[in-house]
Image (cartoon, rainbow, N blue to C red; front, side, top):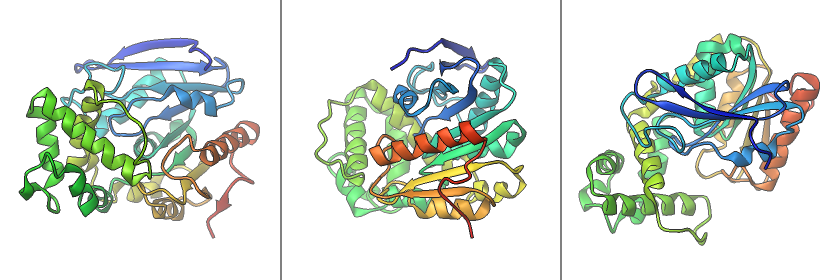
Length: 311
């Protein structure tokens, strides 16, 4: 991939250092892309989905994630501070207004930022939105399939509705390294099975994977530090802006119904349900749909003619 034309770190003042990098055209349309998780870190492959002649693509790792330091840290790590960090990065890079996008948890965070700083946005691109509702979290952990994944390492009493996630969060903070790696392997296996990737070859879990799930458990255990349906309720006060929503019809991690609920709350938004795509942002059909949305925005300043508008 094309190397970054700028890379650095931002010191937050409360114990964190945040990695960021910029790709493409330094004078192009600013596009900030927020990674999923929580806890995953930015994938440099996203630069392959963007016309780098037209866009100034900004990627960053959220607190405790990947190249940001301290890795896996939970102190001073919650959604409100992540929103502050996006604004901090925007000011640091001297960007007046930007197109903001993200997938899954990245879409959650993009909406949270829009609710507080909508005047700084040219538009939103939301792939496979996660709405951070209790039902979504329960649908991931409180199932026989999930309990089977953790059966060999979790005491029987925690394999019950509402008990596994708090146990996992505590174990990933307090347990020895070997036990944490076993938890990370089981969690990864459950994710892959849910996405239909049961036979994917993977290496042994490392400390980075443990840190990823430590952060993810921290956020999910606390409801992502958002009140139920807070994101949807905040949409009524957003300034008018172009919004593109993409969701795979085979997504088993974030239900496609999320995208439809979101579109109903965003007048003028455009929705595309991508046939055959699951949660993977790099599925060929999903990657092509995202590229088309971004190219349309770069050409016309909006998403007219792309996707479908609400009623």
